[in-house]
Amino acid sequence: MNDPFGRPIDYLRVSVTDRCNLRCWYCAPTRNWNLLRHEELLSFDEIAQVVRAATALGFRKFRITGGEPLLRPGLPDLVQRIAVASGVTDIGLTTNGLLLAEMARPLREAGLHRVNVSLDAVDPARFAAITGGGDVATVLAGIQAALEANLRPVKLNCVVERDPDEPDARAVAAWAAAHGCEARFIPHMDMKRGVFSKVFGGAGGDCPACNRLRLSSAGLLLPCLFSEPAFNVRELGAEEALRRAIDAKPEAGGRCSRNWMHGIGG
Image (cartoon, rainbow, N blue to C red; front, side, top):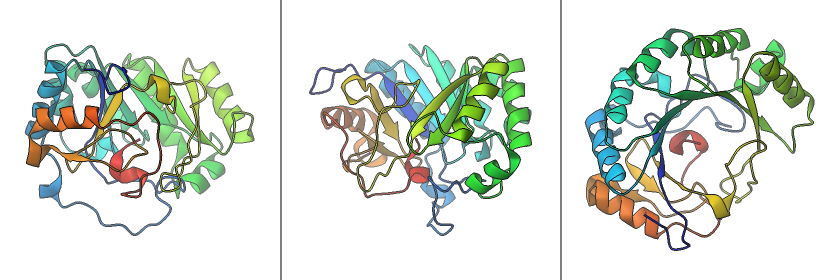
């Protein structure tokens, strides 16, 4: 389907949890937030129903996000359910990498195609400061496991204040080049103030070319990360919620006060 501005919408990002095992300053600036109860999360059956409705409308690309999606038990089962849906051509995953070493091969065998791993620094002290205590060695081991499992291309997502010339970003770029990964640099965003810009080396933030919707772990379909409307798949049904979200997609992003990034999925 096309949105009101003629853009074909064929990409759905699916958040499976609002929980995370890191506390990155730009995503979760406070340690206190109201987490969803288990029964509030969409079940894998409900997500698979949304995926089937989406493919019937022409969606072809799907990405699993969070929070940290690898915290959701049984994730390879969901990947397999998406992989067998008619018309699916690409399944990706965005992760912080802490659990990727043990999960990379099962996910690949289930049908996952590729991964994006958050990597904001390669220096251990800097990484711990940015992520609230994360261990960069564990993340790098997860990236290596993804490469060995052929989850390619492995893309590294590095958040920057302004541009890729910052010291941490340069170090990430050098590490990526040395290990056969692709680095993307994401300018720091502020959803509540409507501050965002195009990703360096990626497609995000390019409003005229945007082809995606987002499904939150609570079942809300968002036309845009930077807009207020949301459509509940449990209340409306998957197809109707998808149609309404496409029809409500704005020409460009604005502001969204409904949640922090961890609650919607990047």
